[in-house]
Image (tube, rainbow, N blue to C red; front, side):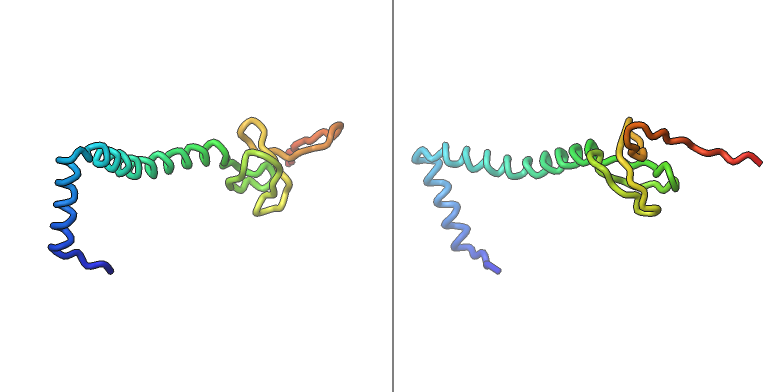
Length: 110
């Protein structure tokens, strides 16, 4: 670990004083802008990443076994509980069916 001494702090202070009196104001301004950017950029980056994930991932129930899970909105995927192939339509998980196949829900009447 680097040890900061009075001598190094005094040298830094003298250097900053020299730059501010000689006309190094542009350097100090650019350093301030860089520090500000490095402070704000991670916050904006985390916010943008969370926004992107919320738009890309959907949490819903499997139509076969009613297990709630999260999946990507694009492409096909399998239910982690029952293994059914699913895809996303209208913010819901549905079973893809080839053209001409009619998918019905069976109700048991006792």
